[in-house]
Image (cartoon, rainbow, N blue to C red; front, side, top):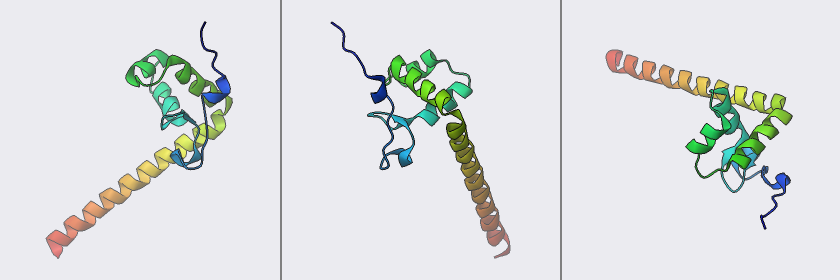
Amino acid sequence: MSTITDIGTLIVRTPETCGGRPRIPPTRVSVQNIAIDQEAGMSPEEIAAQRMHLTLAQIYAALTYYYSNKEEIDADIAAYYAECEHLEAESIAGKSSEQNWLVFG
Protein backbone atom coordinates (compact mmCIF):
# COMPACT_ATOMS: atom_id res chain seq x y z
CA MET A 1 0.00 0.00 0.00
CA SER A 2 1.41 3.41 -0.95
CA THR A 3 1.64 6.38 1.38
CA ILE A 4 -0.80 9.22 0.74
CA THR A 5 0.74 12.70 0.79
CA ASP A 6 -1.32 15.64 1.96
CA ILE A 7 -0.47 18.25 -0.68
CA GLY A 8 -0.91 20.96 1.94
CA THR A 9 2.36 19.78 3.49
CA LEU A 10 4.45 20.23 0.34
CA ILE A 11 4.90 24.02 0.68
CA VAL A 12 5.41 25.86 3.97
CA ARG A 13 6.09 29.40 5.16
CA THR A 14 8.02 29.90 8.37
CA PRO A 15 9.25 33.34 9.45
CA GLU A 16 12.63 32.04 10.63
CA THR A 17 13.51 30.24 7.37
CA CYS A 18 14.18 31.90 4.00
CA GLY A 19 12.78 35.17 5.26
CA GLY A 20 9.31 33.68 5.45
CA ARG A 21 9.18 33.00 1.71
CA PRO A 22 7.22 29.89 0.69
CA ARG A 23 9.55 26.91 0.41
CA ILE A 24 9.71 23.15 0.01
CA PRO A 25 10.18 21.54 3.43
CA PRO A 26 12.47 20.39 4.92
CA THR A 27 14.75 22.21 2.45
CA ARG A 28 15.58 25.87 1.99
CA VAL A 29 14.57 25.73 -1.70
CA SER A 30 11.97 28.44 -2.17
CA VAL A 31 9.09 28.54 -4.62
CA GLN A 32 10.87 31.59 -6.03
CA ASN A 33 13.94 29.43 -6.85
CA ILE A 34 11.81 26.89 -8.71
CA ALA A 35 9.97 29.65 -10.61
CA ILE A 36 13.30 31.20 -11.64
CA ASP A 37 14.52 27.81 -12.87
CA GLN A 38 11.38 27.35 -14.93
CA GLU A 39 11.58 30.89 -16.34
CA ALA A 40 15.16 30.04 -17.40
CA GLY A 41 13.68 27.32 -19.59
CA MET A 42 14.06 24.27 -17.38
CA SER A 43 11.32 21.66 -17.37
CA PRO A 44 10.10 20.22 -14.04
CA GLU A 45 12.02 17.03 -14.85
CA GLU A 46 15.22 19.00 -15.48
CA ILE A 47 14.76 20.91 -12.22
CA ALA A 48 14.30 17.63 -10.34
CA ALA A 49 17.42 16.19 -12.02
CA GLN A 50 19.44 19.25 -11.01
CA ARG A 51 18.03 19.32 -7.48
CA MET A 52 18.22 15.60 -6.80
CA HIS A 53 17.07 15.97 -3.19
CA LEU A 54 13.63 17.10 -4.44
CA THR A 55 10.92 14.91 -5.88
CA LEU A 56 8.98 15.69 -9.01
CA ALA A 57 5.88 16.05 -6.78
CA GLN A 58 7.67 18.77 -4.79
CA ILE A 59 8.65 20.60 -7.97
CA TYR A 60 5.07 20.49 -9.28
CA ALA A 61 3.77 21.64 -5.87
CA ALA A 62 6.12 24.63 -6.01
CA LEU A 63 5.01 25.45 -9.54
CA THR A 64 1.35 25.10 -8.55
CA TYR A 65 1.95 27.46 -5.63
CA TYR A 66 3.76 29.85 -7.97
CA TYR A 67 0.95 29.97 -10.52
CA SER A 68 -1.65 30.28 -7.75
CA ASN A 69 0.27 33.26 -6.29
CA LYS A 70 2.05 34.50 -9.41
CA GLU A 71 1.69 38.23 -8.74
CA GLU A 72 3.26 37.97 -5.26
CA ILE A 73 6.09 35.65 -6.34
CA ASP A 74 6.85 37.71 -9.46
CA ALA A 75 7.10 40.81 -7.25
CA ASP A 76 9.53 38.94 -4.96
CA ILE A 77 11.60 37.87 -7.96
CA ALA A 78 11.69 41.45 -9.30
CA ALA A 79 12.77 42.73 -5.88
CA TYR A 80 15.48 40.05 -5.73
CA TYR A 81 16.88 41.06 -9.12
CA ALA A 82 16.70 44.76 -8.22
CA GLU A 83 18.68 44.09 -5.03
CA CYS A 84 21.26 42.10 -7.03
CA GLU A 85 21.64 45.01 -9.46
CA HIS A 86 21.95 47.48 -6.57
CA LEU A 87 24.65 45.40 -4.87
CA GLU A 88 26.51 44.97 -8.15
CA ALA A 89 26.41 48.74 -8.77
CA GLU A 90 27.68 49.39 -5.24
CA SER A 91 30.47 46.89 -5.75
CA ILE A 92 31.51 48.46 -9.04
CA ALA A 93 31.36 51.97 -7.54
CA GLY A 94 33.42 50.81 -4.57
CA LYS A 95 36.08 49.29 -6.80
CA SER A 96 36.12 52.46 -8.90
CA SER A 97 36.61 54.63 -5.81
CA GLU A 98 39.31 52.29 -4.54
CA GLN A 99 41.12 52.42 -7.88
CA ASN A 100 40.90 56.24 -7.91
CA TRP A 101 42.31 56.38 -4.39
CA LEU A 102 45.23 54.17 -5.42
CA VAL A 103 45.96 56.34 -8.46
CA PHE A 104 45.37 59.75 -6.88
CA GLY A 105 45.82 58.96 -3.18
